Image (cartoon, rainbow, N blue to C red; front, side):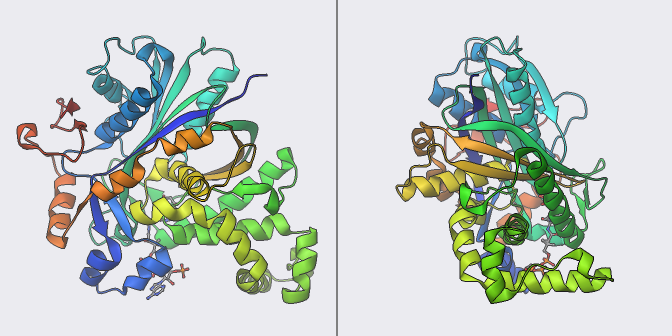
Amino acid sequence: MTTVGIDAVEIWTGNLKLDLPGTFAPEKGEAPEKYTKGLGLNASSFPDSYEDIVTMGANAAYRLMDRKGLEPEDIGRIDVATESAFDNSKPVSTYIAGCLEQVYENDFHHANKGERKFACIAGTQSLDDAYNWIRAGRNRGRGALVIATDTALYARGDAGEATQGAGAVAMYIAEDPDLVELSADQGYGSADETDFLKPNQQFPSVDGKRSVQVYLARMREALEDYESVAGDVHPDDLAFIPFHTPFPGMVRKAGLLGYRHITRDTAIEDELAEEIGRQPRKEAFDDEEAFRDAVREYMDALKETDRYQEWYAETIDPTLTLSREVGNWYTGSVHIARVSAMKHALENGRDLTGETLLVGSYGSGAQAEIHAETVQENWAEEIEALNIDGQLEARYDLSWEDYEEVHDAHNHDMDVDVEELTTPHEEFVFDGWGRMGERK
Ligand code: CAA
């Protein structure tokens, strides 16, 4: 059977940068360490006034098509995953295709276009849709363009304002992929939750503290469900675990939860028992609160062990490098975590071919998905071709006054005079309603 997976990936960051410990924290009267140590963030990428989900998605997709020599006729579907859509009828993929058609001679006439929505997990759901479409034999030899694009902005003064971000990830899903093969096995944890919503409003209503608990609960269920189909996961068999990363501090919690789960009833738990005791078993407790306290105590001790810390440093921490500099990209976030880890391996001369990534995606509302991926032999060329470091360096560093102005601009209708624009790259720019996507 042919392999199916991600053949290529490209990333496009918002062109502005907000320094969180240096610029944001002092204005909020907060310690910089809340960002650098607590949330684990140095900066957020921010969209300039001429950028939106269409321009960022089109810019990432164009870079990908250009680099891989793809033409519109090679693409049988375009799915956009976003939770920042501005049109309840026409999918964002049609706007992005419209941008790309300015550059290519042929159009995307025969591509099936759509939009996927389930908060941040929609990017992974679009990958799954593309995988299923190819596996069903409906692709006629073509691949799918999946674009995860979001402006993750919160209302001024909302606690979420600390965890903003903006950017797009474009992926080409095809047979015989160069980057990773997607496995058929998946596990889900899904429940009707109201931790994070945007019902016909620009900025989300978030119960931030609860959203963290819901993320962890759904992720644990997804892991259990995954193991029920794929068999037990062993922590030392995984090269990396890219998780959905709203901020790295969230993944610190998810990594610890995951490690406790996958080491339960294993030789690792036996070895750790001498140092920190065995994991508490629910059946040994009469009352739920006492059990929860015992679990918390075990986790606190586990976190301090050398064994866990070494595993975390190797398997999870490398997934967070990009997120620390760009913040939350919602649908794109887990996909930059994958790139971040692979980039780390490349920079450290490690060959990942044949190794396994366990990918933990999450969307508020709420659903988690766990699936495995196998790294393919051309992965290093693909990751080497990215120019993400250059893009991050080229971002304009916002002062507090700039930040207020540009946040307000994204909260209102804007008219941008494209004739006046100078941008750091040649790119698609937003020029007001109905005139999107001119390439400057
Ligand atoms: N030194 C070191 N650490 C510090 C510190 C200091 N001086 N000050 C604070 N901290 C630590 C805190 O202890 C805390 O860490 P722990 O959670 O490990 O205890 C961390 O920094 C954050 O501090 P607070 O909890 O006080 O921060 P906050 O009140 O601003 O809230 C938040 C944080 C709830 C994440 C908020 O930013 C928020 O609502 N964000 C949006 C929602 C979100 O991202 N939720 C994540 C799960 S939902 C999801 O994943 C979907 C999605 O993408 C939105």
